[in-house]
Length: 140
Image 1 (cartoon, rainbow, N blue to C red):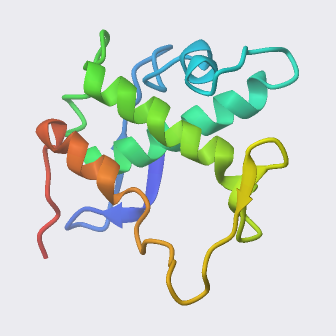
Image 2 (cartoon, rainbow, N blue to C red):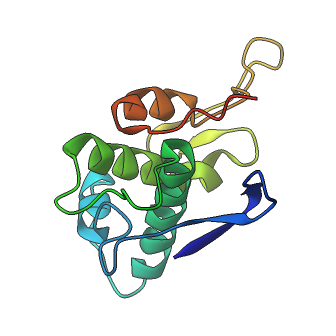
């Protein structure tokens, strides 16, 4: 179970979002390694798992599912795909942390200062894809 400190019920009780036992995150390390065109090894397995966990946490936060209706295995293909896609972004995030992305072999992409600005919400495009599985909309 995960504990979400950011949100509370009307009685100021924290909400608890259960994670299916042994099933969370929604994708496997091997699926992520395949998307990155690499292999999961003892050296990179922990990093790949951390990226999947971070992506799954974002997915759970966005879906805001009812406690008694979590997603269960087999997970919807779209949710698995979003977990992998977002985990790829997490894995590659350090490549662009200094304002450039790429490598010596592929070339380095440098942003034009005024022309390229990062999005305010980098998860938004994934959230749109997850809309069919969302249960609550958090209206104020």
